[in-house]
Length: 125
Image 1: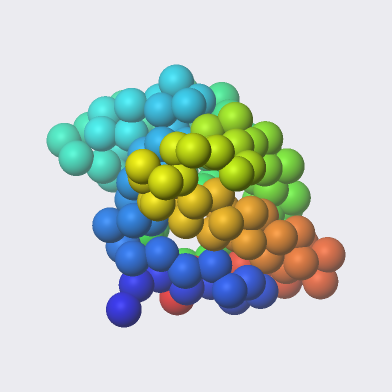
Image 2 (image 1 turned 90 degrees about the vertical axis):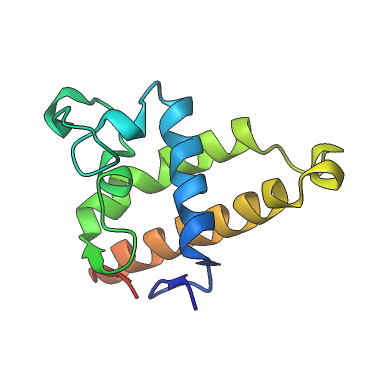
């Protein structure tokens, strides 16, 4: 059980996906727990300026992203992944979740690009 997506084989547990998005948000200077829809947060998403916003402000268990949202998110997602979880580091030995976030994150970016190229929605399932 967990979260899967159309157009890709990326898969996280719900808890793992939550940690993935929290790490992305923190990198972008966003405290996810303060945002509307998370924790006790009420800060509006309109106050956030990052290409990752459609991914961060999304249900973690269902729904979809439009082709335009996928085109917006995918390039920034790749950049952030390369910064947060660089390829083949010793961190992976100490924290296997870093390797999982990198590989799944890159698969997710590929899936977003595939969905966008096909003019289809990326489904969260």
